[in-house]
Image 1 (cartoon, rainbow, N blue to C red):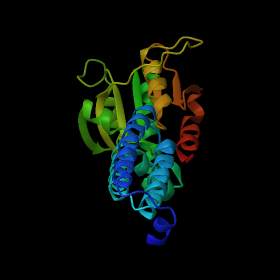
Image 2: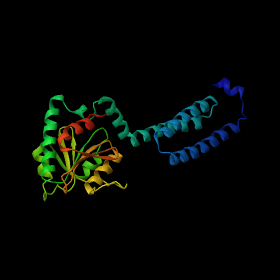
Image 3: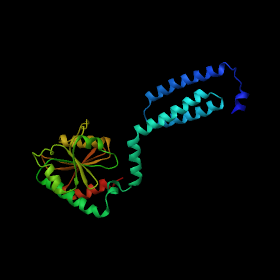
Image 4: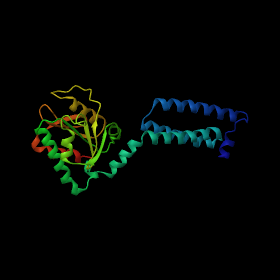
Length: 255
């Protein structure tokens, strides 16, 4: 390091001035980039550039500049970890659970799961009882759960039918199911803003809204027709009663 500095000598008075000047320029650049880009790739590129710049600054003996770059690098890494903690968690869960929704359910419980869901949805459909049932997959729905009414009860057809029975306090909203547990009820989603073909009500628009921003699967039962639909990835699919369980299983099993 000292050899390199000796090869490219600077007058004694200019070294600290250049050091301070570079530090001020770096502060301006980092401030600009931090405001301009708030995405994972720019963050990674910025960190790489900062580390490279720090190494070069150290080689040339610009200690203040190098120390600043090191501090900024650590700060950006910390900010990245906080801002993208949810995304990092989702990706880790994604690697652990390749079986989709059923990665968090014991094989022995799958039959019980489909028996309870199928019985509840078909009964709600037959009685034309409106319902909105969301299955949380890899993307966390904790924000919506906190805004709803806590249930935290084992999944059962009877409880689902009771929740959506007209006139009950929790019927006018969605239920969120995680694994084999009904986590919350009376949950509300922002409806989709896109134009829809066909006759779709507020529940369908809410189901589409949550499917546009998460990987959750939502089952909708129309209170006007009893029609069963599934919303996923910003699309809504109308399902025949006879193969509801089969279609639901297929969608939930996808990673």
